[in-house]
Image 1 (cartoon, one colour):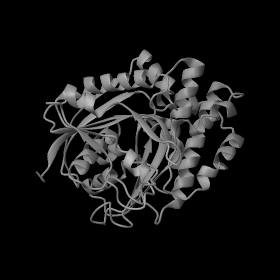
Image 2 (cartoon, helix red, strand yellow):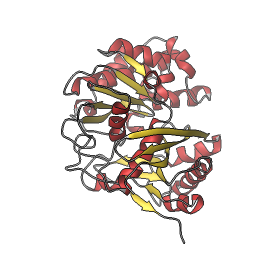
Image 3 (cartoon, one colour):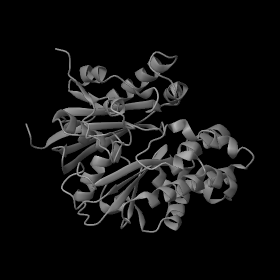
Image 4 (cartoon, rainbow, N blue to C red):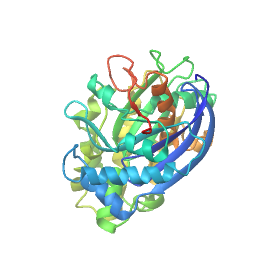
Length: 364
């Protein structure tokens, strides 16, 4: 079968808020239609089980418990979607060290295949890392399809602000994302993770809702300057980060009051994005923002001030910023099933086009 099919995709990001699930009609090259979506928040105990396993690898304490949480939550939300021919399952990243131990996403696709009674495409990152790539980011080929779906005719940028920030520069005038010059993608630095962790530790809150606290604070520019001096920022892309690579930012703002600390962490995220914008082959016409960070007014105001082109949420062009990554893994699942590439030299730094992922089918 080579035509479009309905696929369910699911994503549990580094913000640890919950599982997004979305239906997509696609042939792995283009978006034909968007389908229903659902969200399943992690309960507090579930989130803490995952948090306790962050930075850990298979076989280490807490990893099996985290994987069970991930599988249970995904099975619950994916079972609410109907009509899918297959599932794209990213799992939950617990550790990411592409130049060292590799990359680790908790959750077994075979478990989901058996529960859902559908083929499940999963473990998208390992092949890329084994072949020398960063294994991240993986949404760029889907971003290319989105750019063509909205009818873009000039280079543009997708900015995803989850726990980590990442940028995808897209030139939609190319025939496909595999072509040299069509895409360039990389992680920029911290997204929402340091701010979320700050609110959790100081106020027992999941996030700075709407950016209200950050908007009331003053930025410590010395902390921002120190963050911009990190070696990661001077590396040429492609490049990727682990959620905890900027975890020491919490210590850098420990002497600040809550509002000033929040404002400073937002300013670091914005500054890292602005720094990354200088690395593109041509200036983009606009920046389309997805992920939870677009709901933070302090973040969006900072980006609008710091970046040299219009900055808008993806909803302004008819896309769903909460579900974009779930849709991306539905899209990538079809590409894996049809032996198409999912990453390449300008997205993860791998030497050649790679089709990552493995397919688990229901037993029997």
